Length: 338
Image (tube, rainbow, N blue to C red; front, side, top):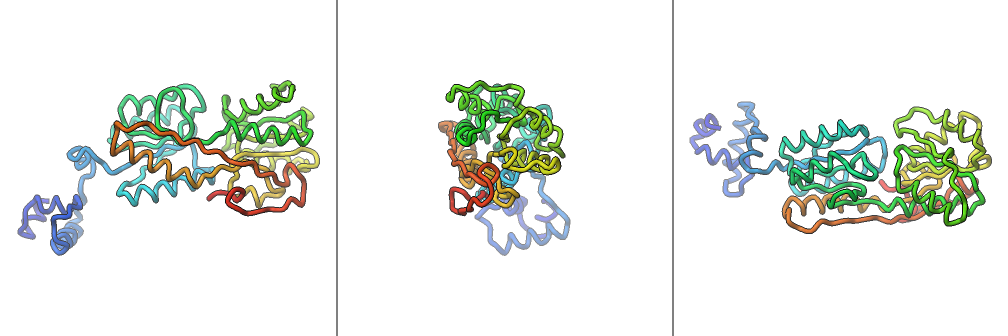
C-alpha cells in the first residue's frame, strides 16, 4: 500500500479507503489505485482487514450433503440473497459426520466469519457444533429444527408430513408399511408411529430400515422388505425413495402393483420418475429468504429476538401409490421446487 501511495503521490489512507470501498474517494483515483495494484499483483490481506474492522463480510454455511436437489437450490438462493447485501458465502459440507461438522464450525469461528447458517447432523438432542456457535456468540441460524437450546431456525413440519403420508398409505388399505430412514429419531418416524396408533394398529419394529442417502444400492433392503410381506414403503426423503425404487426395479418388483412407495420432499425429479413418486412437498422457495433475513438480523442486531419459521406443506399423490394414469397438475402447490 505504501508503494502504491508513493508511486501515485497520494496518502496510504487514500489507498486504504479505495480497498475498503469507501465513498469519499473519486472514481478516477480509485481506478488509478486498482490499475496499479493489478500491475503490482497486490491483493489486500482480508484476514488482517477482518481483525481491524471486526467484520469479515463472510457468512459460513454448513450442510450435511449437497446430493439433494432441494439443498442445492437452497444454497444457490441463499448465496444470491447474501451477495446482494455485500456478503460472501463460505460453504462447507460435513458429509453427515459430527466430528467433521464440529471441526468445520470451530474453523469458521476462528476465522471470524460474521455468521453461520448450519444444517446440523442432529435430528433431536444436542449438537456440539450448534452449542459451540452459541457459546462463541456467533450469529447463527439453524436450517432444520433444534430444541436443545434457544436459537433462530428455519424448519419444516416433518411430523405433519410423516403423519399425512402414513395416513395416505393406511387409507389405501396397507397394514404393513415399511419405513426407510437415514437416521433414528426422525419426526417422520414418530408421526408414522402415531398414525398407526391412532388407527389402533401396532407398529412392527422389524419394518424400520436404515439406509444412507449416499448408498449406491437399495437392493438388499428391498429383498428384506419383500421377505417381510410389507405392501407399502415410506421413505423419509425422495432420494431414499429413488434408491428403493431402483432396487425394486432390479428385482423385477412392480410399483405399485406389488408394493406401493412414497417419499417426502417433492424433489424436482419426482414427477418424471417411472412411476411418478407420491411425495410431500414443502414451500422450499421460502426457505432461502427466511435464512438470509434471519442471519442478517442476527449479525446487525445480536440482541434482537430469536426467530423461528416452520413451513407446512401438502401431500402430492402420484402413480407410485395410486397406479398409472394419475394426471399431473403443475401448480404452485404440487410442482417440484427448484
